[in-house]
Amino acid sequence: MKALILGGTTEATALARLLSGHPVIEAGVSLAGRTKQPVLPPLPTRIGGFGGVDGLVAHLADNGIQAVVDATHPFADQISANAAAACARAGVPLLVLTRKPWAPDAGDRWIGVADMAAAAEALRPLGDHVFLTIGRQEVAAFEAVPDKSYLIRAVDPPEPMPNLPRHTLILDRGPFTLEGELALLAEHRTDVIVSKNSGGTATEAKLEAARRRGIPVVMVERPAGNGVAEVHDAPAALRWLEGLVHHARTP
Ligand code: NAP
Image (cartoon, rainbow, N blue to C red; front, side, top):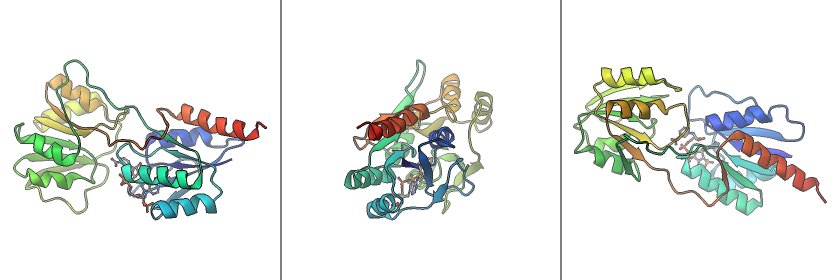
């Protein structure tokens, strides 16, 4: 059976590892090509957009894809919507593999917001030193609140660099340690963190560090899903794929 993994996450790479050398599932991975030096999965990998829903439908047909696992980031809502529409049109089974969202713990001071514009607004009554841990694509939303001092951490620099008069850019890729995060918050006298509710362990330490220092986290909640079945770990996605193979073989 030929399967396509829509990737760009540690979950996608974990599934690729499980499928590498699989006896009956021939899988490949697709990456958007956003990250300059991506961690390449151990499976044949194509890079770049498909050209919307029509392009993805054509890709599925041209490559004889019989199952798709959407293992993209929980905030990559365009490709997930495209995958849902394309698979429905092509009659190809689709599963979403996504890490569980984080939930606040006792002692957390989270301010939940729906999107990045609301996150910027939520900063107004809060402290001056803001730590943006939201990736590089939506930093421009904070131009609406330019009078803060921003520490921006991302894998690659925002392009173009947003017009924020006081900012410091750190290029780094997780996983991050609690000790490292505590040191960073102290060094930059951070008053508030802005985060997406991405979930997962690689970047979770910042939340524990915020809890220990008693600082608030403006948490951008996930966009609504597309009604597609979800699993939260790579072995569950593998079981789903193997179940499809079994189903196809059972008369
Ligand atoms: P997006 O806004 O949902 O997608 C925009 C367009 O990028 C899609 O319409 C599609 O182009 C292309 N695309 C996205 N993911 C693709 C994939 N895996 N393979 C082929 N084309 C893809 O996506 P995004 O938020 O820019 O994220 C891009 C990639 O970075 C995703 O693969 C995601 O897993 C990863 N990522 C995103 C975030 C985040 O916070 N958004 C964080 C970490 C990693 P066409 O319409 O031309 O097909």
